[in-house]
Amino acid sequence: MKNPLDSISGTIVAGLLLTLVLYLIVKTFFVGA
Amino acid sequence: MDFLPGIARWVHLVSGITWIGLLYYFNLVQMPALKDAGADGTAVGITKHIAPRALFWFRWAAVATWVAGAWLLGKGFVDAALLRNGYAAIGVGAWLGTIMLFNVWVLIWPNQQKILGMKSATDAEKTVARRVAMLASRTNMLLSIPMIFFMANGLSHKAIVGL
Image (cartoon, rainbow over all chains, first blue to last red; front, side, top):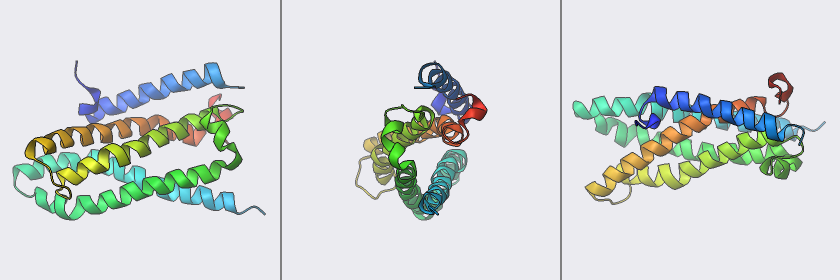
């Protein structure tokens, strides 16, 4: 499997996915905490 | 009138723009340009005159951004670090920024010193340094995407995005 960090597009897609994952984690487990 | 948080926010934004702007310059402009410049023998112009100056502003802007951000959080600093009391979203942004600061000073800068000849290194060490510096820089570009999302929406505007 190719390392997404070897391309700009892979880096940006990985960054967007991480944003979504972190958003869902904060919203699910930390909002109101 | 409490003017200091306004100054802290201003310094945080100006230094943050300088830091992340140079991070995007390295990834979007300098890395691909060095590949082409290496092919026609003009890379030294970048590595000798541009990269050291860009790295100077890059690493110190990172420090200024972090310090101004901590100052801006003020009494909320511990709550942000522990992701509690309504500071969870901005805390995620702060942690991502802290990891990025670590990458700048521990992975990118020491390896760039080897690559640019500021520190002695063998050709084999330079090859490893290039890969480590590149991956750390790309990691920071990746982390900057969620970091900016949580910085922009993590505290005063969190209701807009349901946080």
